[in-house]
Image (cartoon, rainbow, N blue to C red):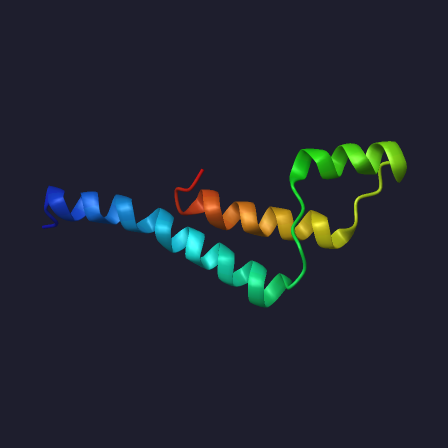
Length: 73
């Protein structure tokens, strides 16, 4: 059986693992800047007729999924 103390360590470690994975994916897999979501969308609506580049779309989804999936905010 896993003790309560071990659960506390796991709850602390998982967000750190998620942040580490997100940094590694952005740095070595995506390799380009991931721009913030809302300003990027507003810029695309006003200047590019609502067209968001595939890079920004998928990189934001991937980085956010990793962070939130491991308990980050």
